Image 1 (cartoon, one colour):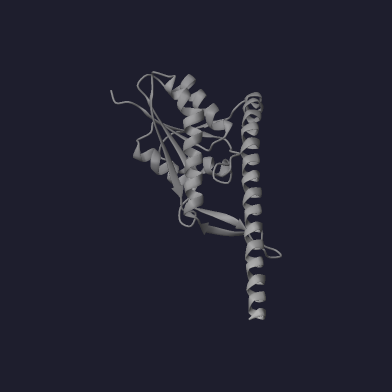
Image 2 (cartoon, rainbow, N blue to C red):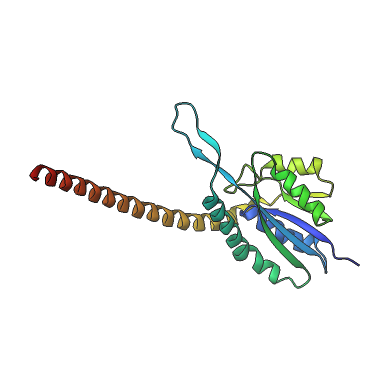
Length: 212
């Protein structure tokens, strides 16, 4: 009998971990394959410096995409692989898919992957609160519920679990934010030093010109 394929879209939040736990405990059976898919954008929004505009949308940035891709892979390795490795009844795959905002939706990508792997079910969170929260809110799940040709199971985590693991994530996010702030301060200081050197060099050049 061929193994069943289960597709789980993830977004790097506690919801993803709860969905995986629930799937392994309540839905998966011996011989199944879990297929994790993490969707990230190829483009991102940047702050706009205009009176009434908040963002300039869809700015391509390969370096930012690579960073998001590595973050997604790191999250899966750290938070989800240990859970899957501890379960001997299932096998698993994981992929990060870049999302082209101009011509396709996350819901379309998920439905396409469900067809590609011939999923017996797509297990999705009722909402998401990750870095790309606009991709994993109810609208995406709703899209899949109405458009996906494969069965969609909507998982809703208990409030107590949300609070417990969200606090754990907040600690990690705080550490990452602190490191980012330190890097930014260091870069700012280096830039100021370079500007001072350039200004001194310019002043020295002017003095030499006057002396000549």
